Length: 435
Ligand SMILES: [Zn+2]
Image (cartoon, rainbow, N blue to C red; front, side):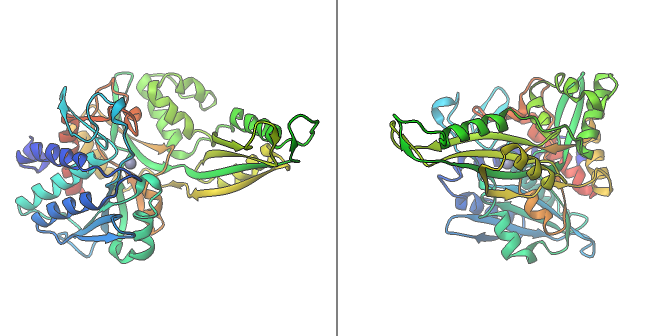
């Protein structure tokens, strides 16, 4: 390992072992809990000379927090957060048992390998290596390994932000998941740093009609009304609106492809993107996807109500416009009810922290280029942004051009190349030194 990254050779193996050990702790949400993972992390941080504390919202729903004192405690602090939970995995679908942490084909396999025990392990590997060397970060760093991100963070980030905001005192910036990974376009590696997230609107559509016998005439059938509305919503394409992160991302893609960027032909650019288009394509407009339906209880009874479930994601700055157009699309006869919502978020791609991320990436991959992008989903960054922090997705990984990385998230055969873990650890170490 390069000495310039400020790490000893031990970090190379350490990051792989830490990630493997974390994968072997089944922290599936909701079937398991995070306690064992939180305790393991606390143990590793204690070994590094830190004084971690474990916080629980409910029994077992544990998060580990530690403050790593910096050289200059008068400067604002940096938050590095990662979640400990993973989505469940059905072993029958996998080539390897999902909680075995097996190494095969130079990759570490298992649930959480990219989402996001990789980043947890890279962070821990840097902390441990630096403390072995007696190094401290330039400023205070708060390390937060939290529960429940995969179910919206009520038992993790939301809980900590609401009940223990003092833990994050002085933090003005944060880094975490779903950014800093490479995408190869036109033979160039672009490192996508997340600067924005779409908002979440999980809604129901409820149609009410007249109940009655299935053999008779009924011109007020809730199932028919709902079906028409769901089809309309599901087939609707909201207009394209380019937010700053998306526009900069698409422009960088075009530059890498050596084609002019035409904001009026976004679909044309998306068509050249490969597997990542299904994510990027969702960030150029609001989306509303029907996901579940319920109605009726007997074959010959027309029910009084019928309900559809929508997973909607609105653009940063577009929440009101989204709801207004959805209401118009749905019409007056079907009710829209909000089951769960969370904010959209966007920060700018500039400033010292962005410069530090860019410099750290380029030092390890001089042919790479850092670009901002908007995540179609949501992360704990939404919660921490409420404390006034600028939040970035920066979990650096240099990936093979042919790996469908976005397909790994919550997918089967989730795995991370060992080289990518080591690369990310070096980049994080460089980044920390510059931060
Ligand atoms: Zn995640």
